[in-house]
Length: 241
Picture 1 (cartoon, rainbow, N blue to C red):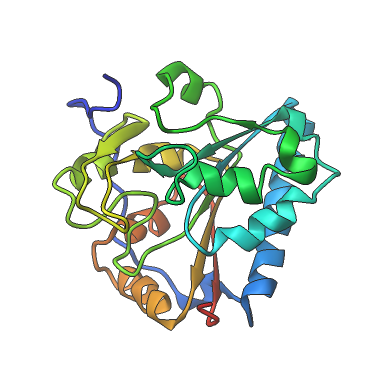
Picture 2 (picture 1 turned 30 degrees about the horizontal axis):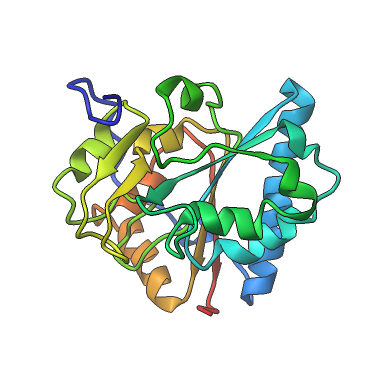
């Protein structure tokens, strides 16, 4: 199955060495959500104008909800030509409270954005379906206090494969993350096959994690922000909600 890693590897990313000026700071969560939504709308608009279609990678957690609310009202976008998929998904029923797809359906795919098409990660999509919307035009990610992005989670015995495999998606065993259920996740290689990445970070504890990654600690988020393949913007607010 394509969800399993193959022997071939993607190029290693550079050690994380970043300067604090790269982090865009916002006074509160509303200001961050406004800026992130505006940036994603701009990216989708550009993609629609250039190629007649656009793809957005959504994510779970608390930070993206207010961004989804704003995007859902963006009636200047032709959402019928936008495909939305997920950075990762819990292997649960679509109506389960832990489902990232449920969050996206309830907060993003309403209003004007209700006309967009959703490509779920669970059950796992065909490789061809995922490949058809790459490179992604916009990737939105959150980050955990352990430095995980998507479901590239420290402590996963298969994390190395998730960070180095050229496969776009892989399974993650149960027992990791919150809740500790089995998951599907895009690999780092797939996340970087994008035209723009937007990382949402809230609270002082997570800002400290970013600082550790920038100082060289080998965390999944450090692999993401230290690479040079895909442009990345980091949005941070001290307001942790």
